[in-house]
Length: 136
Image 1 (spheres, one colour):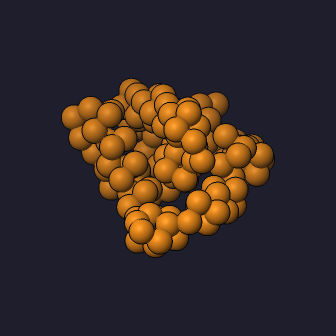
Image 2 (cartoon, one colour; image 1 turned 60 degrees about the horizontal axis):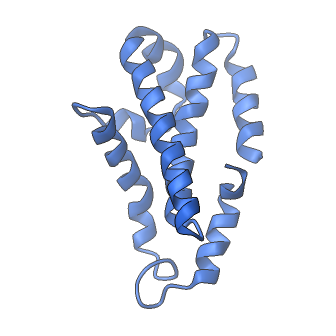
């Protein structure tokens, strides 16, 4: 819910300088990152699958917009999206989304509470609930 409110607030703030699609695309760029991170933390395989599919579908739409509207993207979207989108590229949307996914989950691998022999399901659930994952 907080993500939706934030996306709406950002949309209103940027509407003065952006076209109609820009605020939607900014929200999509952020949603992809959250969905991938939440998929890694999800408490069940079914939830993981749903969040991964959400990230993939939304990411493909965002990349398609980015490719089809390079000038609008550079002017109205790029300044407001997380910097990971500035550092990735590739021949296909799925390749780019693989890079984005890895960027989102790689830091979590360093947390011994989440992976490895000392992983704690309760800690994983805590991260999941603190990360707006239930709102997706």
